[in-house]
Image (cartoon, rainbow, N blue to C red):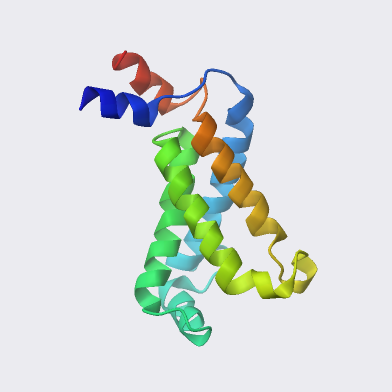
Length: 147
């Protein structure tokens, strides 16, 4: 068990990931808050589920709950640097689903509701899954206890 926890919270040391981790975390958490709570001009869980149903994503309520929770809680985890590798994996999968189901047919550019923003967040998520949280993070503190 100790070895598993150690692998999950392991991280390459350095300050380089903190800025991108915190910025992406804020973006993800805000988007999740829109989906779950209707904050920041979002539609909340019911509205998000209705929209997902309208584009053929079913079961829409469950999918809205999963996407919103992944983004909100995953974003918070990125901000504080807790379980960054697994959170980034979940966020990466969420971005792949968003790109494929919503944005891909519109091309690359955001001006056409394309996938460029989702692709950028996917790249960040993959990078954090590979690199880890960095030096200033809860993961780093946990890792030091399991060495």
